[in-house]
Length: 454
Image (tube, rainbow, N blue to C red; front, side):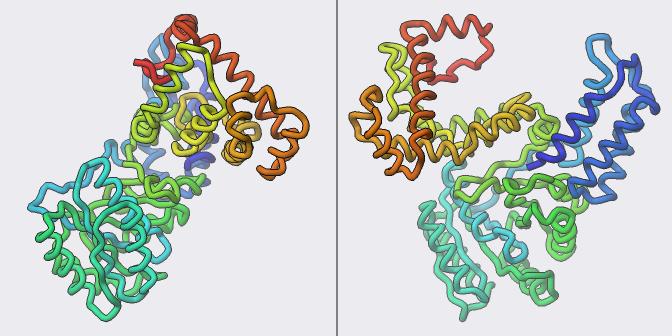
């Protein structure tokens, strides 16, 4: 998300000349570039106008501190205005009510509403330790009810059954009554979507809202529809008292215009981003972190959170101990590392969150894309346990067998073995305190515990 905007802005903001003060003249062309970058990212025109106006107002006449360049000062202003446009801070769900807290999910068909219900259920269960029940009030599509039941099973939360013969109000009230009996904390109510905003749909959901009085009414919208996403959110916001937005499919949206427009147009905060197809691909929306990512500064906080949630700490520490003690690192360990990397959104997902990696990712894309990590895993899986422990035995005929078994070429097997050898050499250096020496040499630039150590 924001790839195009990030690229344009980082290039543009570097070009501000070395003046002691920001003036209308020295920021004129940069502002024009910023305006173009935002419009290309499909940010709504009124939002662009207001954003540029605010940046200009704050920048003109600003004295440049001796320790900073004019470009750095301007970037700081752009960053704080990006944060303001998107809502400044994360707005969490407000579940402070007599249980069960009811959350109503609204949105157009195809926006990823039902999937988002499953993701949110998993998020609430795992991260907030809530007992969750999900229910589908979509009486027009039996498939939607079945889909939600399957998702509930996958994420291990309660599912309240419903049929197309019932009314949405009857379904939701039945679920809430059952949730009270089971001491459920949160009930997520999925509603029917339409292909367009129509009067009947709005009346039905308004009636449902009045009857069940949810504590949160979340609008689920596809970020890839850009400005349309903001306009649809506005129409829903006029019909329903929305409390927030879930922006889906952001992993496929290189522009990011919806995220910058929605808050301005609806006045409602984006609470979550859908960042992939898996049930755990839902992130709380932090405007400050997103602004930092847009300007190519990375997002270390989100990266650290992701590592904490998704890395199997025991496995990582076991490998670290083995490496520290004996300098051993097997192909099985290598495969586990690749799998954990994939869990965290793959190589490119990780790199997009690291500071200064914007330019680097383009160079590395061809060498280390996520298809390649899958191919590497397939090659290791085609080996025998002995070959994984002792790769030296892998010669001609074995290489041909491994390549055939993994659907790859012999040169792919050679490439993997070469990369693994390089990694093994590095691991041997870490044996018996070598890691600490290496860290000291790097001036302690890596955070403590990065490699599973304490």
